[in-house]
Length: 197
Length: 216
Image (cartoon, rainbow over all chains, first blue to last red; front, side, top):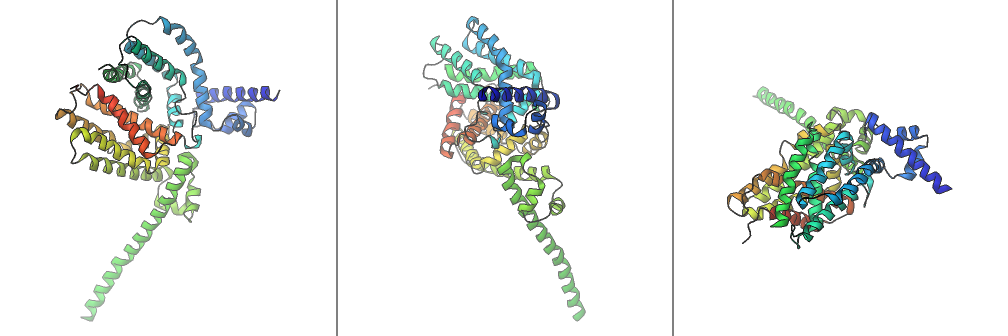
């Protein structure tokens, strides 16, 4: 019973936060405002989430659920080289996240949040994307495309860093999907040059 | 003669009075900056108020506004100081080294500089990617881009044949720097020590440069 009520509060906070983030942006949406819209007390927001950054992270994760359901269905059927599949996955992410570009920038800002504390789920929160890229690289090893002694986890880290920080183009006012994808394609090519040589 | 001495003395006094005032003003500025630095580091940009900064420095809010236009002015000054120190350390490391070794030396120097005040780096990055402070922080950091120093040593390494020629050395440097920023973010959130971050950053650079390193 108590668990059900807790879940209900959590749900309402997330729905209210998602609406507010989209209407007035992350910075302007205070915890108090989120609580008011959700019809709960400010205190109960904090019993569900340690910080506003955590609320945002959860909202961003949930937005991706449908995309991943679709990707999981498509991925096993994707043909082509490992590097091409990797490019497709990042291109799909840019296309999806650019629909809420400002929110994604706020998400990057929040990922450095000092109040999130150690071992915050904010960092590297997108475990699904990480897993997909990791699988893609492992498949590349099996196919003989990627060197067997390559450090796959580090390659994943580097690909994700490039993916995230390319958003600087959006931050300075170039929310151009084609440009972002072309840049990422080049970066993926450079990292693969090291993984295959 | 007497008159002249008197004249000279009063001239000295006239010079000294504003100097004293300037010194006092400078001390006030430094006190405010020190307390602002502490509060920004502890609470981040949004969490630190001018009132708290003033009271931690033992003065009124008005006294803070006499020295600085607003909170963002204070923040940019502090961020700029840390950034200038970083750039100096990276430039010093780039000098007098063989080009390939200079890439790692520059990264090591950056790690040391940033790790000496990691919470301030976090507050800076958080502000850099935020809507309101982003443009201000970005234009300050761009005065002397740290990435350019890295790009210069990568290009030097290519020029002398330590690294194979690549189509876009700036992009290569950009990727090393992106990996570097991620490593620092991990350091901040997972509590990695300086030595561990140095190793991580070097290993990442090696993986990125692997494609540009000719096999012998």
